[in-house]
Image (tube, rainbow, N blue to C red):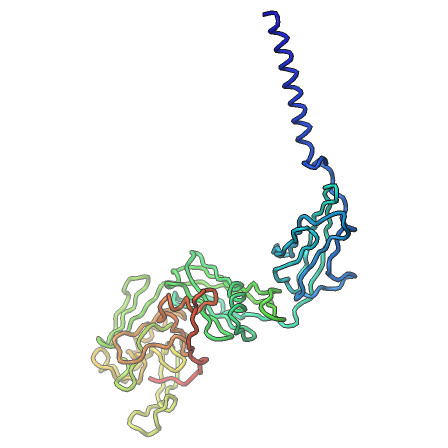
Length: 417
């Protein structure tokens, strides 16, 4: 019993010694150097291939950083441009060389931090900056339509300043073209041709949505000697969901706003030989007055089908001349027969109401006609007639995308009635 206090004293001293040892170990690295030691200046230990004296680096050449001598090695490299993008790279196993594997941004400014250690394991660091030369060729995208408020069927368009044919280059471009919607939607770009893309959601845009489009292409390497340039962003507002369905079989048109029927009216559509196109079309614009001639759609002057008429309240749905418009000369047939040359005709009062109700981007669909289906591209916006899985195949980002035949660019022909 007399030894108990002594045993406790010995145990306490031993525990204190262990605590002191642990504290000493916590303040040093595994190589024996204090972790709080300031890294030495490694300026003499590394070199890089970026030009000196304020000259700009060639963005087509990889950045290389090399350890000098045999008394140290590179342990890490971080290269970041002014936009916050990291430049990817690889460090050799012996730490003697780091080389960029990602593409440098043209016209960019990089800050590079190199971490090293000497032969004794002491840490070093070197930080330097350099700029890359601007691109000699800059690919830009012009977005459409113009800023404003549109219907739920309005596709976004991107017109490129030069053609892009290579699939890998297309993927770079497509990744940089950003479409954001509030509320969010699922959507995709479709390459109409080498210089034109369309974007649409899987379903129609939500009524009241806000849509912003940007092209983050500036300085991005797209292909051999080809970089992106600045593209002006676009902001759109989506209005109510207006859908008009013209039924050629019942000679009527039904118009819905946000799912509720707001008007049903008698119409006439294309007669045999001039049948109205089936399918979904998008309002392209509105013209209070249009002079319509049969010669503009291939009808010989003086033939039994020839016409030359003043037309009012004309809402255009194809570039080739299909409209929804006032047709007072056919009021007796509206609701009973199809007698037009392809347009949807109605009374002047109904045409005026329709003209004032719809806006570009609204949906006009024709059903039960003997006409062909609306072209997907080339004669307005027939984008919604393509099933979603096939639409996705038009994206360069889809692995199994298949090439598809496309219609030529739209030719603004004169209207038919």
